[in-house]
Image (cartoon, rainbow, N blue to C red; front, top):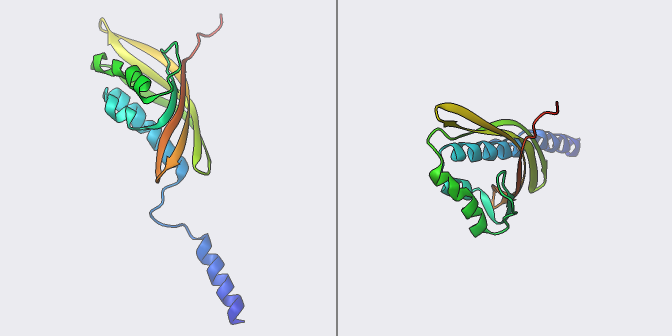
Length: 151
């Protein structure tokens, strides 16, 4: 009888949530939100810190894929010249986690004032992230402009 009771107690303990551990899906979504916030602050160093050293980026406005840190740094260097009105606004996110890898697909809109008028560039993205030493890092990021609706 004591053995059965101990087994039941052990199984019940395993079913309890472990305090202090955030849900991986929430963590991946938070990294994506932090990325958009850093873009809006035009903080290239913060943006770059979210990419793994072996990351690959196919940027929204890039004609070429960037597969090394120097090329990714070059791409985000444009943030230095972005106007103060520049913003990245995150839209929907669809996060899937597979162990230490995660995929986030969604949308964001880049906007800024041009001659007093807001110009918006909606885009869609896919980010692949890998958990390294407890931290989610972007290892692959593809972004493309949303095409105009057909007539």
